[in-house]
Image 1: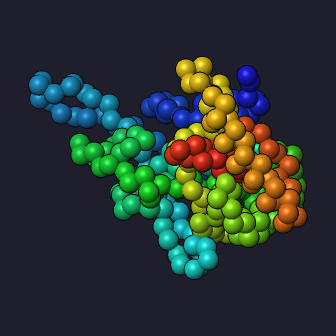
Image 2: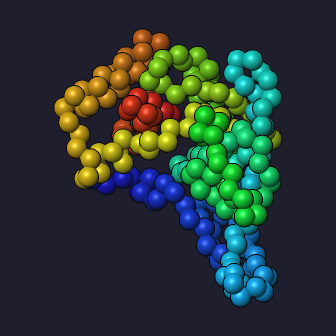
Length: 241
């Protein structure tokens, strides 16, 4: 099995002190990583231990449908496509800079702070400028259509819009975070047996979601393994790309 080229990069980025992910470079609004050196001189401690300082971006958006302004703190890049990128974020109150990042916790100083999985979201960032050879008008038109659709759909197997914000240079879509990865990961995992009952259940959820869209005059146009995320108990969410 092989992913499409722009989806073939790792879903989890690891930043070193001297380089950054290509998806993060060239944007002043992306997550950044700054390295500093621990100056502790106690020989009992690790000499000159390298600590990565992560400067975290803050997002504000209006919730759907209540229109209340809420804030989220970006944690790490989840992935990117031709017109957008997706960042893992949390609504928990954590500092602007942290000393370490993990899936389950952040580290401030030497203190680990566990993250509440119920407060994690995926922030989809769509730049207003032209991307991938598309005109600015096409990107903005596509964004408006996606917003209208996400506001209107209500189905257990379709991702729901939690909040959004239209900024001068970009738009933010706050979506549920699906920690299980996409179906491509599952299908390509040779250590996991896809038995018939599970396959039937997943296929039924996908068909149900597509049928709902078609009944409401909506065509997804990109139904593939990479467009489907799995939640706990393998609930499948069909997402837009």
